[in-house]
Image (cartoon, rainbow, N blue to C red; front, top):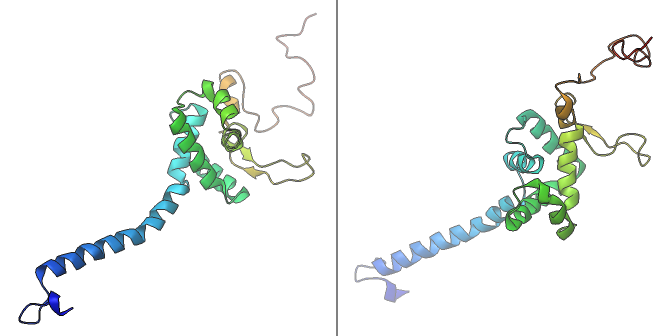
Length: 180
């Protein structure tokens, strides 16, 4: 240690710089596990971007996105990490058009269920399994009128939020179709 001290007992500049650089490296290395964990788990913004990609939509409701992410994470604590792996695989495959998803799913069978959970949450408006299916109910509400399943016919179909007539009003054909 005395070789690093000058005549006045002070540390040399070279030794000080060496210690400073070494300290920065050690401090930086201490951050690496945190950065690695951050890259292994999806957050809400990443989930919304992944959802847009999987549904082929440029705009999705943020409130519904946050609900879907929370519901899928509550259903499976490993979901955020699985969603991150799915995103990485989609990036690696260069998949930008969901018309090619079938081939992607065949090549990545371990990731396809994660993608289907996300797509189902958006289109059906819930996650999990509803009562009556598989003798359990772990369904979590995400959206009703905002579910994407209603979009293809929204110009001619009213989202069925409540009965629009008397009991069994739908049994008789509409008057426009009735023939005498």
